[in-house]
Length: 194
Image (cartoon, rainbow, N blue to C red; front, top):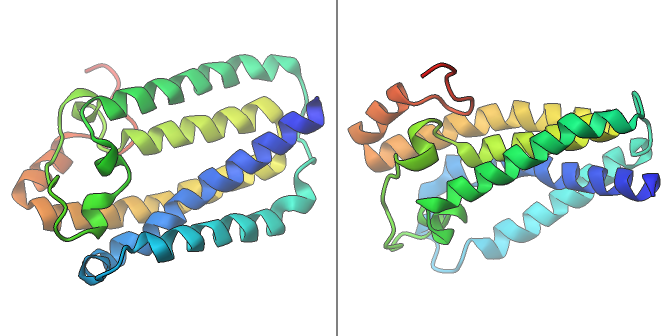
């Protein structure tokens, strides 16, 4: 059972760690993706899968190396899993599936070009990324796997770059409205105490 959980954690962290890399393919060149006559996902999704395989091949050797192993670590991990799921649910409340999937970023005539600043987004600009971080931390803390901690660090580093690019792209798309929102609402970690 432990082997199954560790392999599941490793696979989950491989996929999560490549999410910022996926978006780094989009945001610096969003205008170019929108100029394409065919769906950019015909290129983007296979490239993302290649990333999974590549990161998996690089890290697979260490997928069973643990810093610690205790059942007690699953208590904070469970809380983080719950927080991540709650963030995902709250993120979808005022956001469409098209927006969550990035369709406005890559399709020029996509109808849904609206800035959402209500709900969870009134407290944090990128709640989905915070949800991803909670899930990765949950797997890392729960399993104690070195590879999960390293993949979480990779996701944080690449995510920081990607979020800057995404913010710049959103500011181009929504102008002063997004600039004001960016000044008012924190990026990923909500302010404590109001």
